[in-house]
Image (tube, rainbow, N blue to C red; front, top):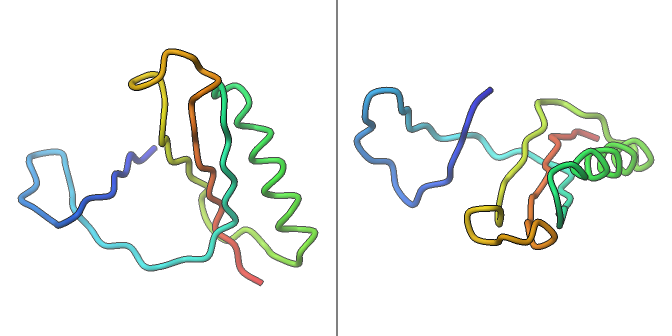
Length: 88
């Protein structure tokens, strides 16, 4: 597992942290609002959409946690973006 976080600029990395640039990629992206237990439905929707529209998955999917338990007690307010790399 790899944990990633977007930063405004590359800084001096403490031990155990690595700054790196990534190449742009095309993804199918789905916003999921609610508990993390429902994330599988977002993945199912995204993969079905990709296949129905002639795309193939070409990399590791990822989740971007936008809102969660750190800023909302109500899990119905949690927001997660599911991204799956794709090619035509």
